[in-house]
Length: 374
Image (cartoon, rainbow, N blue to C red; front, side, top):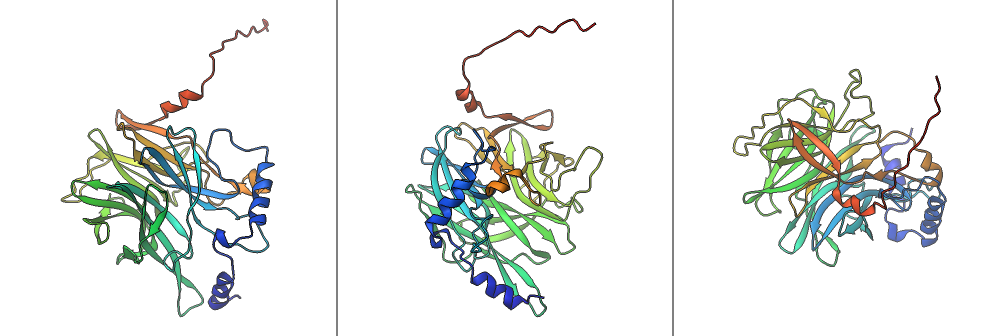
């Protein structure tokens, strides 16, 4: 059996950052991916490797910014290369995207085992980014324990990201395991809030609200939707927002048992909807959990408020623990086409963004005549 120290040594001997990789290896992986017959025409996908959660979906300096979780050499075997960071795209219309390259890498002691998911908000003339840094610590037994950090960074108009030197929060709150991640930020009145996915010590999922006045000092407020005690063993990528007079919590619970035609994916994504959150009492009156998408490849959604007030959604067109035909070509995963959200009759309704109309060509109709089969 490989010991903790041996595994740790193996990890530290890996190449971790893309800037350390021979450019020939990178171009070779991208060339393999280009030969795939499955390359997308309209959906965002990586040049190579593994793409998953959308991150930092925001509007800043006249453009939409969208990052995604990125492991570009995930299917490269020799040498073993570790990388789990953010890749950066920008757009003026949500349809045509400018490739801005790697954005953040796992290059500090607070995120060396993964630059995990997070979000962004405009603060003055900068984009503030909050995300989870994943690390592992040794224990007395032959195991590692996960130690999460909530980390901050600023991006200027030059698109350069500058990480904070110290964590915003260290470890999980008391009563929760090391599964504490994916902060989604917003501002209410004069305070900043973020909701994070968490796992209670009894191995049930929850969402935790944190608050700050200055983006540097953060405090744990408590659980959001604390009455939901047994909905899976972990909630990932939570996202609280409001449409009209309704409050909505969107999240991805893991560990739901199938119920007829529902919950038949490996992991689900859905929402609860109700009255707006009472920030003073942390009271959120809501209905039952509803799946957001009935497809087989939909996970880790994130929303943003567009300049015109629309609530827009991106999500990972994929899911963990499955194999894709594209892996043969050294890549997997893409992002869904952005969607507009609205509330109708107490339900969250999705439609393709109206900007996609720009891709439409001339309207052509044809009449097909079928022979009389009787």
